[in-house]
Image 1 (cartoon, rainbow, N blue to C red):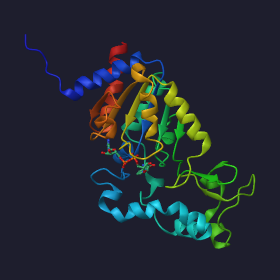
Image 2: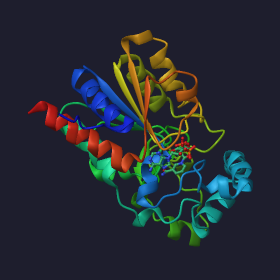
Image 3: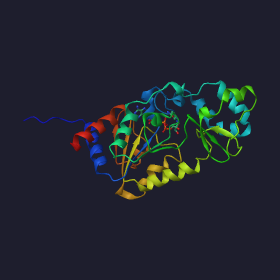
Length: 272
Ligand code: NAD
């Protein structure tokens, strides 16, 4: 009898499904890669914003300083120039986002920690979501940390009336977008919760991130510092420092929009 040959990715999809079924507290970390199949460019992938325009990277590194120096001017520019990520209001989640929702609904995934600001995990329906770098759907007070829906403030009207930056309706502090800029501290609440999740999990799925942006990239390292009681699985188009430094146990190489739904299908097959 001739056996059916399985590709390495196939083997690893099965391994990831078995690891998920055996885990007590699995979490997922995601980065820009999970949203490229929704049409949002990443930064460092082959067609990334910074790969195509290296000058955009150094401009991004100065944005928080520019906000602090002149918040009114920063807001005026923000409202008149398109985002480097394109029009985020017209994008939709893809199969990768929905696969994580399905894993959560199956009781196999306890939380999703994302670096993405595109809001797509929330739109897809992930319930336990930590948006480490904030969300473009929200605004945040620099003073008290309160978050608001973007629509809670009529930003165009405030611009016309010369009343930018918006003032916090709770404490009167200065409002910025919720997205965390380079050089800006990670909001204390998400930083604390994320470290707690990395310390608690016994399985971490790291999806579509180059794992070079800190402090987010510390989270797999915090998990690995607990030794082999944690399994770290990468799902990425290419190897990353986590792969090369042996932080992850294995890499399932490919697109998250293809690999994650196949892991979900395998989980369901094994459960029946
Ligand atoms: P990154 O651009 O540094 O790395 C993306 C990684 O994902 C690369 O390794 C790339 O090869 C891989 N990748 C691309 N498409 C993939 C796919 N379909 N399937 C699997 N892997 C894929 O992104 P990062 O690590 O998230 O760091 C960038 C920072 O910029 C983050 O902090 C994030 O906040 C921000 N950012 C956010 C968005 C967004 O919200 N969608 C987009 C770009 C950048």
